[in-house]
Image (tube, rainbow, N blue to C red):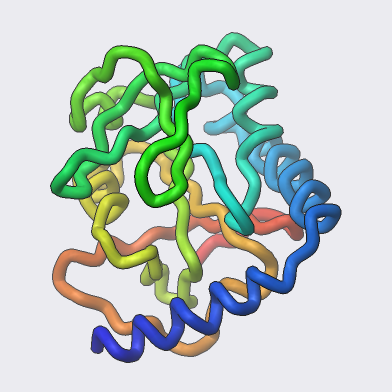
Length: 190
């Protein structure tokens, strides 16, 4: 099972490596616009998100728009055991470079359970299959987040077009299925 996930990760990361900066920027705007058209997201006053890096689906325009709209944004801080703590976003200058090439907020943290007190969550992934099985980077960070949400809070997975897979992703006992994916081409219910 691990080998299969590893091979999928390698293939998707290789595909992402071919994306150019212009396409990534255009796609990030499309992701923002698609999310802001979703009623349960548009009326949110507190959102958990993440700062995209490299060729991940872009969250920068979304974070800036939410901030301009007065939405409180919680961003993750990776703990040594790969659980996620959360801190409030205070603008781009509040972000610091963290291990694994991530950008994290530098302010006080609110604890791993803070994610259960938001109106919506943006979740990263490398791919999702048609059954909602999410393929992450392998550390289990967001599996824990999804478990804390227990389906009570809407979670939106951001992907590039072509990353919703027709082939099944191997599912392990800790994997939590998702049901909504946002790509540059729009919203997808699984």
